Image 1 (cartoon, rainbow, N blue to C red):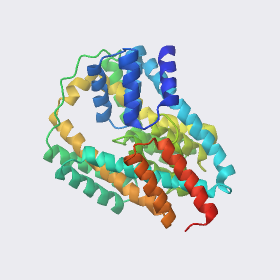
Image 2 (tube, helix red, strand yellow; image 1 turned 45 degrees about the horizontal axis):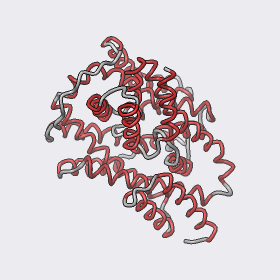
Image 3 (cartoon, rainbow, N blue to C red; image 1 turned 90 degrees about the vertical axis):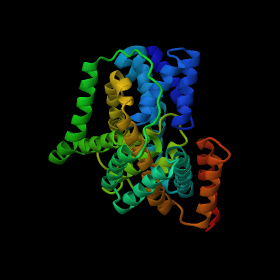
Length: 392
């Protein structure tokens, strides 16, 4: 466990660039350097975690930890990879009130950074996940559905419709035969993990309604967000916003400023939940609220990986599952496109200067391939300068 924790702690402090970059760091560290597994086995883990809902890079890390030191190793891998960015974002939440008055332009710049980051994510995901007219149509329909029915209901409906339509209309993806990988997880433990996953997903909303305790309501909201996100990373943005902004737990400005700040830290983007829990005007707040939200949003990832490892070879060979996943992936691109319009652009780009800053930051990410850290720093500085100069 110590070896797993220290290896992932180093990666949690240095892994900038988002989920795709994280997978590259993992391969370099655990396939090439430490030789915990070979390329085929690693590719199979990546395929599994892209197949499941949740944060793909964190799930690959959990699976690698399980392969090395059992379930406790999976927990150690998650802690090491997650803690650095979670701590940084909680500290940012504590500093937000102090910067609120003097740093209004800087904070607005962070909101503009979210525009560039989400736009680049939509652009990249569209090219990868919607390469033909069928899947492009799925994405367009999901966009319209998410805009017509804002909130979790429209998003979940779009995902369900994408899966059903994909299972009927799309071709199954071609996949290589899965190698025999050894994971110290038995089928009994896997069944227990799946049972707990679905039990919490179904019972937490009931419990939160019957027992209106703030901590229980927060845990329910963040657990559902972590359990129902296909595509990971940026796709969690609309689900989380629908959970915390409409009830007044977090303001739209604080939400988008924190999302922009989350691009400047290493590690998984899901640690944005720690910031939300800490800045929340509902429930425990502070470090306690951050820890609660963080544990809730990542718990589904741990349960899903644990439950899927013993069955992955059989599951991925089913054509119906492959077709459904292709439809779901196209639908989540549409959901993210809807979120790019509302709330990201509609609440962040209010002047010509804002549009220029967002366009420049998008160019840095999409064409110059610069680190998100550079784009976020640029937006924060440009936002502060535009505010001081009074540029419209």
